[in-house]
Amino acid sequence: MDLFAEGENFQIALEDGLVRAKVWRRTDLDASRGAAEAERLANHFHVFSSREDVRGLLFDVRVAPSFMGQRTQNALGGAIRAFALNHKPVAVVSAATMQALQFERMLGAQAPLHGREFSDLEAAEAWLVAFHLGAR
Image (cartoon, rainbow, N blue to C red; front, side, top):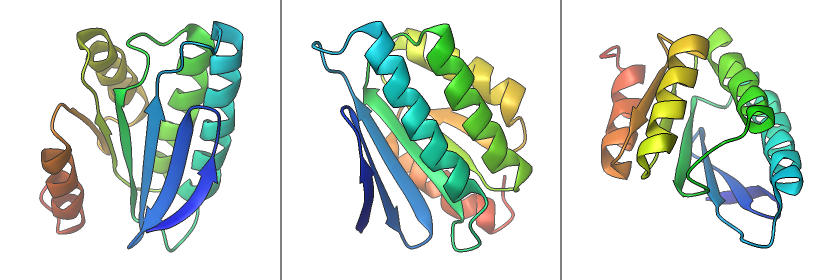
């Protein structure tokens, strides 16, 4: 796995054509800094979404803050939409109920045919593989 970028609360790697991004909670980041990091992360996602060597996105937010503000939602929603417009799947793995609800809504609006929310990492990985085999 090749590490691509790191932020104050995120890490992005590329492995076999799959973007693997992980976000974690940092109690020392206020809402404004957290949203700024989400915008940085989204900018990286936009770049990856159009790369020919990228097949999809696995976005692990299980240890991220359990709630996203509007600025974060806007940034990540646009980036998820970019993957969908390029016909690339997005699997989001969440743990908190509010996270799951926010991402389900976001995926439904931005990537209805290309995005799914999961509570299990292995299930998300299997779905991404199946997506490329035509079993959506």
